[in-house]
Length: 251
Length: 283
Ligand SMILES: Nc1ncnc2c1ncn2[C@@H]1O[C@H](COP(=O)(O)OP(=O)(O)OP(=O)(O)O)[C@@H](O)[C@H]1O
Ligand SMILES: [Mg+2]
Image 1 (cartoon, helix red, strand yellow):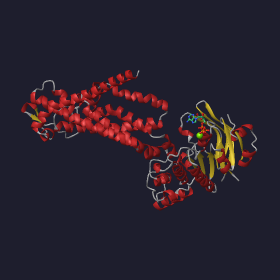
Image 2 (image 1 turned 180 degrees about the vertical axis):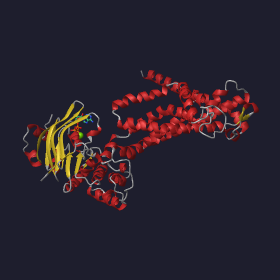
Image 3 (image 1 turned 180 degrees about the horizontal axis):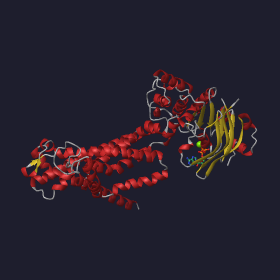
Image 4 (image 1 turned 45 degrees about the vertical axis):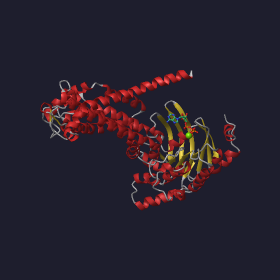
């Protein structure tokens, strides 16, 4: 499979704090790459370099290259809205905007110039179905998105990022704080979605990484310790630290 | 130990109650002094008449109400664009360090004595307005500009707090959906901060209505119904401050009655501000 994103010698600092240390990684198209690692290992920061969301923090310094379809996304003149429409993001804490379910989903497309009512309605239905949420909310699309349950809010956030028709979807611990049923619904959705999208999934749950990830990268204190296929990493990891982490013997 | 704590608690309760009692006493005193004349002239005769000539026994304060309304509206008009831009810049575009430095400085503006603002109006604005727009200088326009600057800190500082209170996740959510920073501000952050900003504006109105010294110095104080922004007017507060010295009898009562009108206006404004703020928290 071809490489969707190529990361070359990526370093990230918050002030003087070296958070990502010389990361080299290729993310293949239509795969789910899971990123695992203990707290503070830089997983979230890494994810946020991929849609340049770290840029809003004033003290951040980044070096290296990130190529999306061969184009350096840190190059001068790259439009951030354009990049973020191509590379969608779902956060650890699902936070719908304080608007209706419908408005949450059409927010991005509207800003991008989609005005036709039919087209917007079609998008809402399609994305809610892909996020396995349609049946639960189809009768109350115009009630507030913030009134949904946690698991539903998370799926709404997935749906709204799909509405931009991105190519890559970044998910930051989308199932932390969700019950097993909501979790399996989201995993089911991810499994369907990877047919169309490239997915990068940060997760604290190694079992989840093993279940849904094609490839896995293990981060520790800002270093990428190991990268490989799920089967490989979860059966015969090369590095002792990886083994310690996935067997729960860590720190 | 327990009983000692109870004692302290009781002491604090007494102190808290006494501040309320003092407030009530002030209200009662103003009412006692001012109410009789309102009852005699009638609320309509007092509030809806433009004739204010204490020597002839005519006590209509409509001209002053209109003067206050014009100046306050003008002040908000001057202040709002400035304070909102300032708040948006400091909350959304500046670094935390710049914000941490500039916000206290802006708040410091509120501590400048109002007589200084009045003085600035006389030396800087009077000649400008006289030379470029005509009139004598003291006018609705002058007072609006100066009052607008005086209420800047109130509105700006409350607006910054309201903008900063908008969850960071709304910003990130909107940006990651392909919105520009400005679209995010317009479509997500301002609507979410709306109630806070509104209560800030109302507190600003309260300040403008209550301001006295600066207004006396620059508004002209003529008891007339203004026909243009360059006309001098008198406000309710100025009316009391200017005449209380020598007023006796009915005249004195009429000034207290003016105080009642002010008192009620300010209380209503505060109630509105609090209701709005409370509604904002629930959301
Ligand atoms: N905006 C920021 N400003 C300064 N430092 C930051 C910022 N964001 C993250 N950091 C620092 O970067 C380091 C890595 O944080 P990051 O959130 O990427 O870890 P993580 O692997 O996602 O952890 P977790 O599993 O707890 O989510 C931490 O030490 C954190 O303090
Ligand atoms: Mg994280």
